[in-house]
Structure formats: structure tokens, C-alpha cells
Length: 120
Image (tube, rainbow, N blue to C red):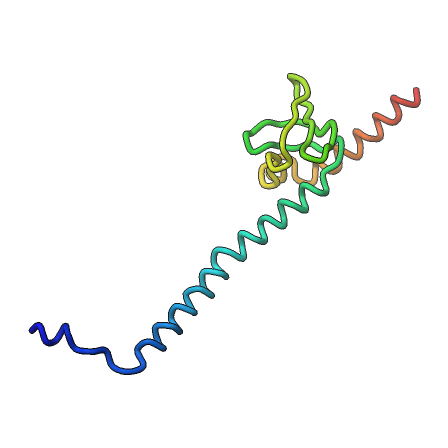
């Protein structure tokens, strides 16, 4: 019985193992790495498109408007005052789920009312 376990593998077994490992690496790339990279690109482009007056939801659940854009973050105006947050703290998913297209429309209308009040 011990001789069965000690028998040498047939020739060519190593090349099949390499092919299987290569297929696994490619599979992992398409299943895990590529979607994560795409999500990071979407987050980056979302953060770049934000402007002063945009309504946002942070990853912590805090709601507010962007009062000021700085190099390293945003100043968010909430009911309790103005707070500074990192750009990564703004959640694209939460913001789109809460405000969606309505946020963009409301931002444009709020900009019009702000300019009208400034003229008076």
C-alpha cells in the first residue's frame, strides 16, 4: 500500500499545473481586481465633478452641502456648522441613492437663487 503513494507522477503533470494556475490568476483578475479598479475610477471621477453647493452624503452618513473645495478635502456645511473632511469621505453610492439627479437640479436652482439675492 505504501508503494501506491510513493509512485512518481506521470510526465507532463507540471505543465498542466502551470496552465491551471495561470487560468486561476486570470480568473481572479477579472472577478476581483478589475471591478475594484473600475469602482475606484468611478469614485475618483465623482469626486472630481463635485462643486461648491453640491449636496453630498459622507461615508459616515452625514448629509451636507459643499461650502469650499480645497486640495486635500472639502469643507462641508451642515446644520451644526462647517466641517472639513477628506475627499475620500464623500460616498458616491450614498449620495446617488439619497439625492440622485435631484441633487444636480437643486444645485442649479440654489445657485440661481444665491445670485439673485446677491444682486438685490
